[in-house]
Image (cartoon, rainbow, N blue to C red; front, side):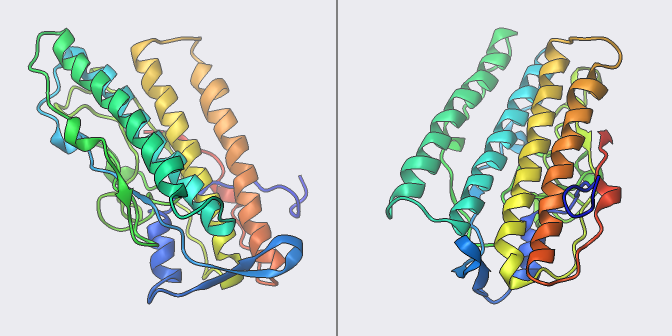
Length: 288
């Protein structure tokens, strides 16, 4: 495919936080491309600040591990989805002063309540003491450029992530964290879901005029990874397809989506006259 239109690439940063640390230190205001090519002033995107759940759980019984892993993946997927929305909001603000509370944080809390309840039920269903997770439902906002904490699993050291909240330092740091949900809290590898293992994306210095677009695409990559991890978590509970199912139904489509997102990142550099990074080698993901 033509380099100017599509690329074969895959990113694996520690999070927009890592990118943000590079771009936004000192509260820098960024000029991003506006509609019709006119520059628009845009600040770094905020990310959601949700309590982590994995580290608040008691030892997970083997019989409940797969269900719990699936729900932890759902929590991370929702964080990635809302971070993507906040990244878009930084480029094209919408709504009034209460938009984020009403359209992002409120619905996110309701979704987390449902997921946390299913985790509690997974314990209760097998006769284990039901944990009280009610206090973990509400989320707030991080300062611009600060990554979201996610429910990284036992293998989180092997997997970095790319978008708002997964490329930063700390729990999900640059190349050290992520949404990895493999491995149960109690180490029962047999019932734990596998996770996708995507190359980390090391970008050159991002021009201010391209930063908002790059940030939004990194958040998109995180959303794609979280969705793939959630699908793998469901497979751990209800297997489907033949031996090539994961390659054909998960890794293949993920690669295609990442190609498109990575190409948009390269175009964002090129559009502002910066040297276009070559992200071809980062397209293909494996499994942890």
